[in-house]
Length: 257
Image 1 (cartoon, rainbow, N blue to C red):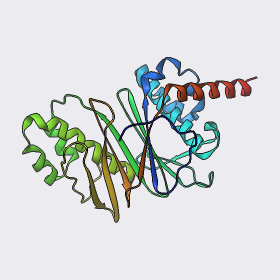
Image 2: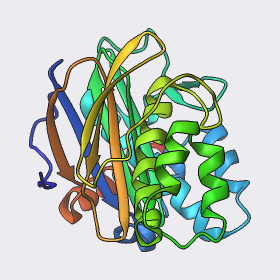
Image 3: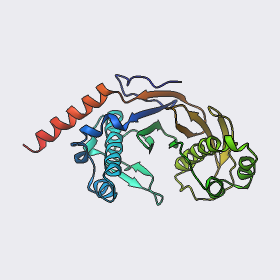
Image 4: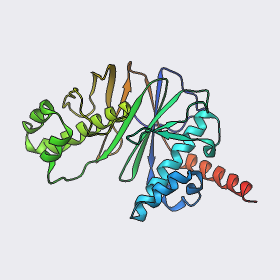
C-alpha cells in the first residue's frame, strides 16, 4: 500500500478506514494563520511547550486535524468542538454532527498520521526509530511478561527495530481503546516481522492491528475494532496544504474586517 493524492470528495462509508500522512516540514514556514483555527484550550496547550519547535508542531498537527474533520463533516474547522477522556484522547462533541465519525492522530519527529472511520473505534501510532540506551528497561515497562521474554531472546541487532514496531502496534491498540500506555490488561501482541498484521481480543472486543509503511526510519501501525476495513491511504500534498491555508486566510480576513 502507498499513500495517494487526496480525493476530490471526502466521502467515507462504514467499510472504510482513511489514513492521512502529513509532512510537518511542508507547513512549518507558513503556519502563521493556523493558531487562529485552534480553540483557546488548544492554544493554551501549545503555549505550554517550552521549545518553539514543539509549539509549532502541536499547532500544525491540531490545525490539520480540524481541517480534515471539517472536510469530512462539511463544516468549518472553526466549528469543531472536542471532548477528552481522562487519558486525553479527543473525540467530537456528541450532538453537533450527524455523522458518527471516529478519529485518531499521532505525530513523531516531522511526520503526523490521522485515521478516520465511522461507527467503530480506531487508533494510530507513528514512531521515529531512535537509539535508546535503556531499551530493555523501557520494554519491561511497556510489554507484558510474555512479550518481554520474546523480546530479550531476539538477537541484539534485531531488538531495536522489533521494539519500535511492537511499540507502534501496542500504542495504536491503547489509543483505540482510549487508554494510557501504562494501563494494564490481559493482552499479548506477537513480535512479528515488519509489515505484519494480527487479530486479537481485548476488553470484550475484537481488534485488527496492522503495520503501515510510512518513511524510512519510522514505524507506524493502526488498530481498528472488529472487521478489517477497506484501507485508503492519502498524502496531504502541497496543493492541498495551499488550498487549506488560502481558505483559512480568506475566512480570517472576512471575520476581522
